[in-house]
Image (cartoon, rainbow, N blue to C red; front, top):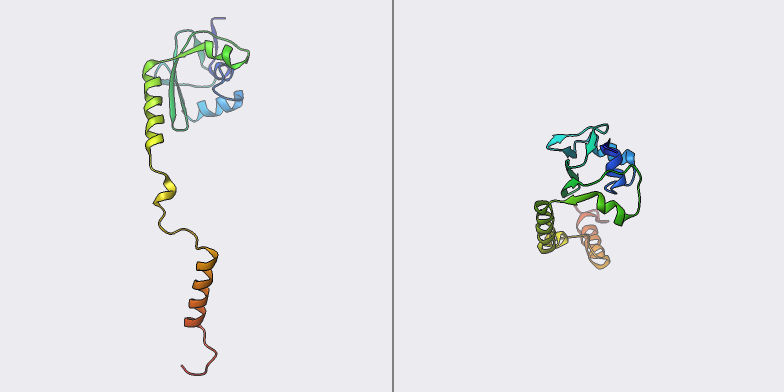
Amino acid sequence: MDKLRIDKWLWAARFFKTRSLAGDEIGKGRVHVNGQEAKASREARVGDTVTIRQGPVTRTVVILALSGMRGPAPVAQQLYEETADSLKAREQAREQHRLAREPALSIEHGRPTKRERRDIDKAAWDSRWSASLDP
């Protein structure tokens, strides 16, 4: 096998769960082959460089083998080799994410507790509503 559709290879290499998901991501411009935006029908060859963006993660891999069959993960990992730059960038992103501040800590005032809600309701009722006839 000299060449294979890129969507089928991405599915076989377990980057995407289904071929249709691979095709959708390719259609959205998140997959590049040899620096050019790919189409689902583009033929992948051994030695091609594929850049895949999945969420915040961007992976750059070199195709080592082609397979039209989806197999177990250890076999799928033999179809490609991730570049050193890609591994380094993913490690830096992982470390940066680990050291990032918890987003929930930036919230100064969240939902009131039950007690705070009762206090708010009591204060609001007393100040806004009155049964008296005095203005």
